[in-house]
Image (tube, rainbow, N blue to C red; front, side, top):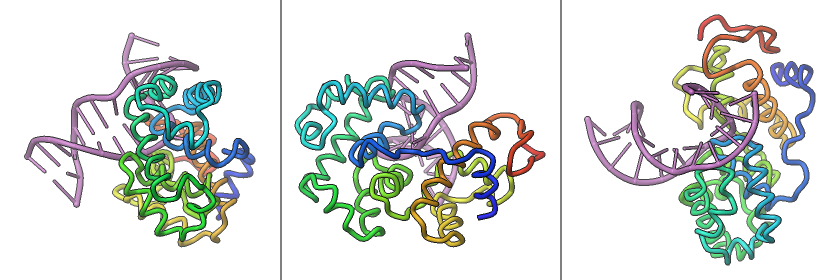
Length: 210
DNA sequence: TGCCAGGCCGGGT
DNA sequence: ACCCGGCATGGC
């Protein structure tokens, strides 16, 4: 919580995924896998312009046509398949009804999402938190890098361990999880580059090793 | 120009 | 149980 307050004080609210509706967040969560958000926005704009930004439209569209629309997001063939996998499951299991899906219990819904090919932990947690407003902390490469560089977690921590590190010590608050993750991405982008120390003026303090 | 981006899967040790 | 290559566009 102390780190959260430092980051919030340094950067202010990041307002991630506020509007646009939960379905767009679901789509964005898949498209942003290992990809810059700016490219994801282009892909989403393509979908919107083509009238394909709805569960029904994505259910009907063919994977190869979808791939061309999401091309700017990179890995477009694989992401088109992953989106189709998710949407097919979503209709088979929940009849394309987001409210029904998010009325499930968090843990069981998370397991269901993870069973869809192409939906891993971060994507599942992003959907749960940012689309479903469910308290599932999102871990990503920045989270790991920032925490391990500052020796807040062991180098060999797993995803689930890092997730538990936050969930076990923070109040279970959706808005807090939302903002904290966004702030960790922000501080990671600004100060914790993949290479080099370059941690001057980091709100969490400097680290000396790389 | 090379490196990086809000990962995940599948195959090989 | 890890480790690694593949997937691909756009910005700096």
